[in-house]
Image 1: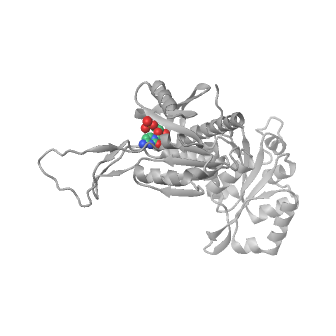
Image 2: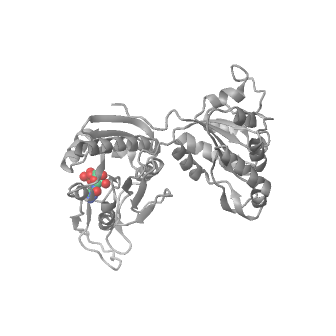
Image 3: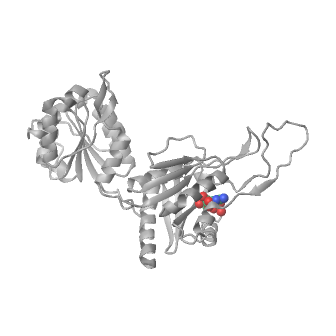
Length: 404
Ligand code: C5P
């Protein structure tokens, strides 16, 4: 069966106006592309003074439009054609001047003409100095935009490039990305509580030493991001990772498998879906030494005892959440993963080749469930996570339908 990315095919027209926040629009374009959204950039003349069109062209892979008289559209009418091909038009940053223009229906350059000629929703992310933001004229213009059904994202408050502090900063690119994803109404997990474990665990031998593995946490973090983008309430239980974490509703940091187990037990009753991505250490030292072990010439024996299988515990609860496992194998990947899926009584397991996937940004995956086997070719882990999350949501709905 073919698994698809819910965002694939979504097209966003990104209008960039002249303000220092224009440089953040480049990061936004990068994040949108990474999230599977096709981005077409249109810049005003003053935006081009802050950042080059080539930057956006390189990030989006699309020609950047800057002039009303651009002859690249087949009919020479970029102001009509571009918005007809888009699902939404986002102006980020939207300067005070540009906001005034669209509030009053002015159309003296490509971007403002596009806003007037559009037949798709218009979203704006204002960015300006705090006095400009608080000026009565800007407030009036914003009221007009809201009355016209235009969506306003932000602004944020904080330190501004002019040295002042207050309201008017453009929302950060990650924040804008979430709002756009929500706007596209791909929140197929809205109202669902998703519990995710990520990263390795660290099993202490003494105060300074321990046993761990090479899991980076990238896949678990990507799954948390994808669950957030799908509108879920996400609790992330994370082993020791050195990566920035997404803005989940709740994040619990743990070190050992025992701590992860305790955190999962405390959270599992409040979850509809449990996704166990963590590479939980299978064993821990039988004994913990509270002072540093001294080095000697003799061989050292370490007795290891098994850790609890967290996923198996959750899947065996009388009323378990929808449980998803991950299996990293080095041989007979599908066969071993399917055996694990049956043994742990999981509706879905996702397997990969450990030697290739551990710590990497990309992976090739295979999903095994009651319907059979689905292959996801090598791709960025976040792109994979979005596809997997949509599949999980569908299987979860089907399971609920059956038990209803
Ligand atoms: O049996 P194996 O460790 O290969 O199973 C992998 C799956 O089980 C992963 O989803 C992992 O997060 C989970 N697991 C667990 N507790 C363990 C070991 C693995 O939850 N102690």
